[in-house]
Length: 135
Image 1 (tube, helix red, strand yellow):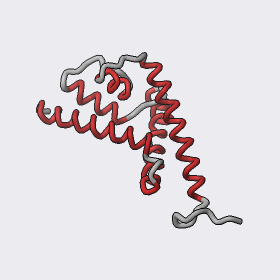
Image 2 (cartoon, one colour):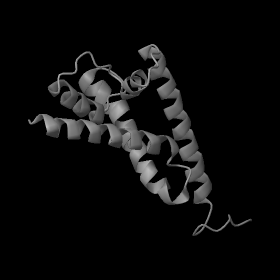
Image 3 (cartoon, rainbow, N blue to C red):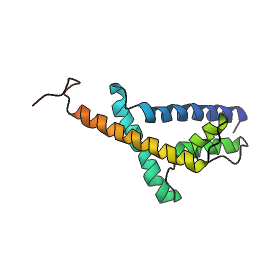
Image 4 (spheres, rainbow, N blue to C red):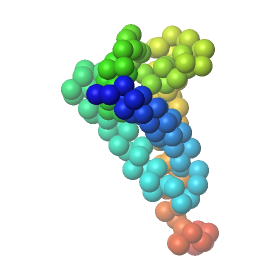
C-alpha cells in the first residue's frame, strides 16, 4: 500500500478512535445522543467482554486498535502497546504502567455503563421528554 495512503489511514484511525473513545465516555450526557451511545457502549462491551476472551484469551480486545496497529506496523512502527489509551498517553509524554491504564480504563468504562443505565432507567419514566408523571 502506498505510504501516503497508510499515513491517511493512520491519521483517520487516530482521529476516529479518539472521537469514539470520547463519545463512549461522554455520550450519555446529551439526551439526543443517548440511543447511539447505548449502541456504541454495547458494541464496545461486546468486543471487550466477548470477542477478546473467546478469540484472543484476554479482556479488552478492540478491533479498531487491531486494525490501526496493522496500519502502523505497515508504516514501520513496532513495539506498539496493546492499548490505544496507553499509546495516546505515551504520545503526549505520559508513561504509566500499562496495567494501571487498563485498570483505570476498566473503572471508567464501568462508571460509564452505570451512568448510562441510570439515565436510561430515569428517562424510561418520562413520556416524550416531559417530566415523569407523579402517581
